[in-house]
Image (cartoon, rainbow, N blue to C red; front, side, top):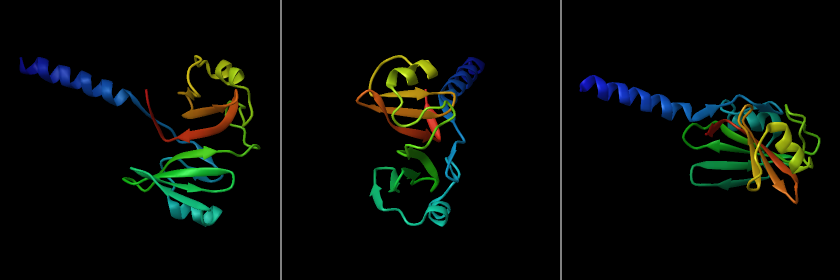
Length: 140
């Protein structure tokens, strides 16, 4: 009986850990999961705005925002508004939603689509990409 419990526990542990995927994306010298606020300010200067949330702090710059996780003091996400940015899929701000969903194979639902292979979240407004988020971790 003890071996069955250990086996079931190991299966459950594998299942839970398989749900979280980590990524190593970069933008303008900032790497998700690695860069700190001092890394960002050394390269981009002081943010124009700071907003505290329940478990992170969001720092705003002209063409992007970053969120830094309180628990790790590392970049958790990079939110890109820069119209000149093209991601690994060739997608940029203004790309039609249907094109994005076709490229990444996402079903139509909600105001965003997730590229699980690259850790990207596309947000839509008026049928077009309004921001691209590079995530450090996504839970499937």
